[in-house]
Length: 223
Ligand SMILES: C[C@@H](N)C(=O)N[C@H](C)C(=O)O
Image (tube, rainbow, N blue to C red; front, side):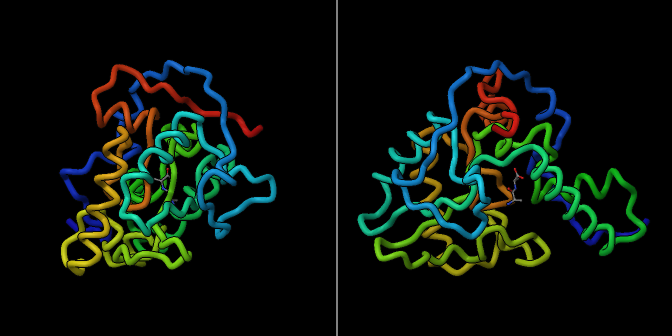
């Protein structure tokens, strides 16, 4: 048997897992709201329509509450919220193609599983539901806080440091992640453990993680 260049972490349930896909959605109909003007929004993945800055109203409100429990000088830096389904598919397919080149002998099942360490298949993606946010933290003057890897770095690019509880992080980065985790967990949000910056509320991954009977936010077609 050949060893995989994409080692599995057996304690982590991936976002493409059949158990996550099987979670039913009871859509609550809450609107997407624009977070610009409410919180700091970073333009690095901005799209012309401004979809990236939108989140379900209840998620935006949770982030505002969580921000109050950060250290005094810290602010959220929102990078990407709502993502139209077509964009989600494009990102997933692009990453899967990268992994195929790294492991040309891998079967499609292995590639899909490995890809879902860093990108969700559109069916279960929290971003497509406006329920997930990629975010980091900066000081009031806009300086980004050290989180131990760049936001959105893949497992390959970051040598695994993107995993929220990765071994080998500096004490400072571990502490900074702990403060982020405490603030976001206190408002009921859940983290995707392969990405320290990815948090959600109300989507299928949230429902799976919290044993909620249903997700409350399902996919939203591009407005
Ligand atoms: C692509 C990456 N930044 C991301 O958003 N990953 C999560 C898991 C997703 O695609 O929902």
